[in-house]
Image (cartoon, rainbow, N blue to C red; front, side):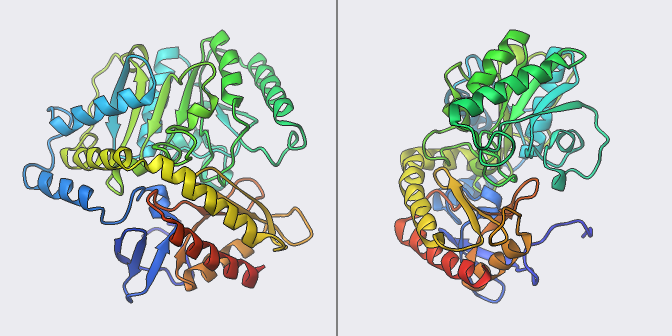
Length: 417
């Protein structure tokens, strides 16, 4: 393994199996999972419906590539195209969110004949050469070399930065003015704006609802495409909406939508949705060896069916709302907690050094360790000078488990802070 491979905990744990919202390590210790393999085990561990679909498909055929049709791929593409909200949608499956965003950049730059990309400050879009080059979070961008010319727009972080003290309406107005000014300085045709509706690795930050709709008015005047990165926000996780972009829907759907992670409930699925004119703009052959694999598509279909039939978006709204209330209650008076924020089952606790507004990464690491000792797995993240605990349980989380996780976190925070 390379030295730069990031592992959690001073003594990394080996996870051997899971069930529901719990996982077990090699020593037999049970943990309540509030991170889901980085928001990927979206529904539940060992979900019988998904396990059965994978097993049955594996007994027929596991792999064929996109050179051949397979029914699960076609059926899932039809479902995703309809759910996306994009008119005349076309779907291309990949194996990860990184690859999905890479494909979206290929489509946008080809369609617009430009290598200029607008991205948000504090953003993260994957670990490929092109995705790293548009990532606005320097902690995850190891090289300044890039095939793209990237310009960074303000607006992804509401509670920090030069516009933090403005009202929501003033914040949007200032960010739009910043975008207009930036476009006035570009030397050519910008291809697209790519944005996470809620920034994942950056610490679950988000702008006021309607920001990207306001941006869309400016983008449309210039013919610039809007790419929404729904790798972490898709499939109802925010509770309020099925897709994150729907909080900014006043001026219509995006031109391109990328997804991954949760749709496979742990299986390796990513994909791109785009209106036909954009998706079909490539003038060269292309395939995916593993994208659209029969076994992953079967898993995705089963998982999507379960999610819709059991209204997991509604559960994310109800239980997520309760969890956020409990987190705000248990962190009240904890000196190291600057902010509790989030939507649905996508919550964050930002930590600072007591009495200051300075990030406290050491405290975040200590809380991560203490939560693990208490039987809870969470994540961490944050962008420029921030330290954030990331909390994103499977969407089947129940009230009892939400209360259990909040109690463990309270003890971990009070011990560390």
